[in-house]
Length: 125
Image (cartoon, rainbow, N blue to C red; front, side, top):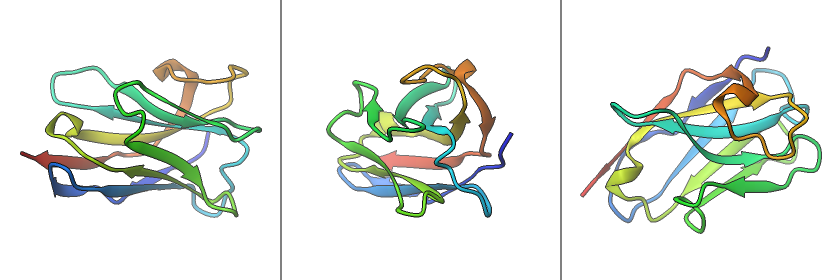
């Protein structure tokens, strides 16, 4: 288990950008696969983007490919989600999560064992 904390959410107009951050206090995140998920009211939590545990490659849901970018800082302390060209349908609570499964590209909720508290992203039209 690892304690995660997200930050950077807020209110933005359609077409705007936000950058979310995910950090584990005092611990490197390089030992885990890290994923970003989102959950809109009345909908299931869905995978958005991930960065693999060891190789560090990134992968995305089709709905955000080309608009969102996941990255890690050089120290491996923080994982970012840069969100560009935001649309009202991107409105949700965004969560980061850590995974230790052997799956190359974990993207199921059940692949992740530790979750942050979430940060609200609201995109106005």
